[in-house]
Each structure stands twice: as C-alpha cells, then as structure tokens.
Amino acid sequence: MKRKLLSLILILSLLLASSCSRKSITNSECLTVYFFDVGQADSSLLIFPDSTTMLIDAGNRADGENIAEFLKHGGIDTIDYFICTHPHEDHIGGAENIFDSLDIKTVCMPYIDEAFYTPTSIYTSLLESIEKEKCETLYLTSGTILLKKESYSVKATAPGDNSVYSDLNDYSLSLLIDYYTNTLLFTGDAEKTSESEMINTNINLDADILKVGHHGSRDSSTDIFLKAVTPQVAIISCGKDNTYGHPHTEAISRLNDIGATVYRTDTVGTVIARLYDGGFNIETDNTIELDGNK
Image (cartoon, rainbow, N blue to C red; front, side):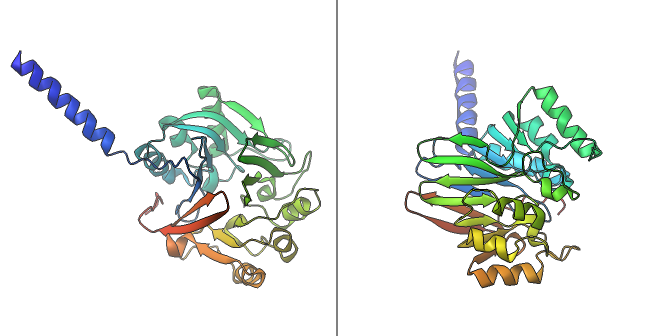
C-alpha cells in the first residue's frame, strides 16, 4: 500500500512539475503580438484577451517545429485562425508541422485559380493537411470581416475580389486589426500592385503598427502606401545577411521619411507588441529565435 501511495505521489509531482514548466504567454488584459524571428521567412502570433489565437504564416519548412514547440510551451494547443497569406515556402513551409502538432480550427487564405498558378509541393501539402484535419477553410478578399468583437475586429484589405496578378506576392492576404483605438496592418508579401489596390478601396488603412510587406523589398512600402498607413512602428521580418538584400535601403529610407520607428528581426530578434485600451508598447527578445535553418 505504501509503495502504491509513493508511486502515486511521484506521478502527481511529475505532472505538477510539467504543468509549472509551461509558462503561459496569454494575457487577458491586452492583445499580444509576437513577430517571430524566423530568419528569411515570416510568422506572427496574435493572442487576443479572450484567448482567441491567430497564427499568421508559419515560416520555412524547418521553422514549423520550433514555432509549434514555442506555442505549446506557452500553453497554446489550439490555433483558432491559421492565416496562410500566400503559397510561398517561406510563409507556409512550416504549416505541416503546425497541423501535426496543434489543433487548427479555421484556415484563412487567398483564392488562387490554378489556371494562373501551378501548385508547388509545399502548397499541395498544405491543402492535404487542411483536408486531412477537416478544417474550416475561408477564402478572404478585400473588405471581408473575419472577426468583430466588442474590443477588436479583423478585416481583410487584400487581395482584391476577382483580381488576377502576375506576381504571386500580390495575392497576399492582408489583414487590418483594430483593437480599441490601436490598429495593426499585416501585408504578407504584398508589393506595389496590391498596395495600390488597397489604397483605391474605401478602407481606412491608417495603422499604428505596420508589418512591412515582402521583408522590406524595394517594390513594397511605396511612398503613396505609407502616406495612407502613416505607421508609428514598422516591423520587418528578414534573415541576417540574406541573399535578397532585404530590407532594401530604399524601403528603409521611405519608412524613415514617414517617421516610423523600424524594428528588424535580423538585428533585434523577436518583436513583441502589447496593445492596451489607450496605447501600446514594443519589446524585443533575441532569445526567442525560431529559425529552423540555424
């Protein structure tokens, strides 16, 4: 009897230690946004005060496991909305690991007619994972309201309804997120064609925080677009010494000219934004490095 009791105590102790080691990254008092350091790739996590979770992209194939482990260690086992902005490997490559490790409720993505795009193996794998897990799938276009709650809303600003693009980047699903008086704009890999379309809608693009399109490429963050957004903060996800030259000096110059404070994941690591009723703050954490290629 004593041996059984000691065994039970040992099991309970191990379970308690395991649960205590999971440091929660949720916060009921604010909207928390992690702009992950995933090298030359893209992935962001949004945790709303009501515990709704949204993952925007999943980095390269090698990043997916690291992202999933970070979420699980932070007490997150479910992703309510998995946003796949467009079918490039550096944005959806890690999706298979995300599906294997977490419970995905809804997938949001742009609709791309296969007449204009031949699916890659990465994109095909994403579609197979969606089918296997029987996730709800939403194809969003500009003006679609994804979420509308008392304190926050999420609306698509791109791609345009029935638009056809020559560059796959311009199919990027862009999202405008309002939280009380604060606004964030996520633009995937959108470049000047998509930016021009967004400007020509009746959507107010003014945002406090801009997730800069296409890792700060020369053809993103045009002058006219930045004048419409007027961001206080601009966040660029890119890899150190990447071969693409991201972020481009011209894009950085335009961001500086508009008065935005620029944060780059290649220099400061993961960027964390916390939005409250009445303001926001920005932190950086170079210990949260989820680049699977390192």
